[in-house]
Each structure stands twice: as structure tokens, then as C-alpha cells.
Length: 82
Image (cartoon, rainbow, N blue to C red; front, top):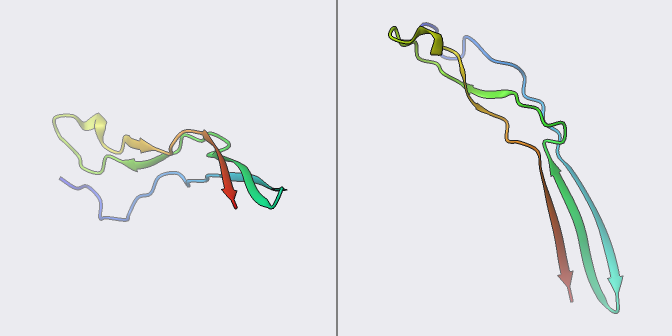
């Protein structure tokens, strides 16, 4: 049973900061791009989706977080152009 109209209630604002640092290296006629990507740098755990359906047999589950922002992770990359 839905208690609210769709879009009537929202959770917290989702703020997420991703950073990419890269350096282009030119060596012997080739170009190498070396970089690092850091996703969710402040490691927020803001909920993204919530339980929207009210279940009379389990009323405590209503509006509980179901998914959160993905955790912080780092990716290294290298690209060679010749």
C-alpha cells in the first residue's frame, strides 16, 4: 500500500566528488598518458533509494535505505600511443 504520492518525499541530497589526475609523457616519439582516478573521494554513504511500499506486517521497513552511494575506490590507468 502506498502512503504517499510518487515524488512527494525525498531523502538526503547526494553529493559525490570524483577526481582524475593525469600526466602526458613524451618519450622517444611515443606518447604515454599515466593517470589515477579516485571516485567518491569523501566516502559519503548517502542513501540513494528507499523502501517506498508500506507493509503492515513489517511497518519498521518503510522508508529504510535500500542502496547507498558506491564506496570510494581508486583506478590506475596507462595509455600508450605510438
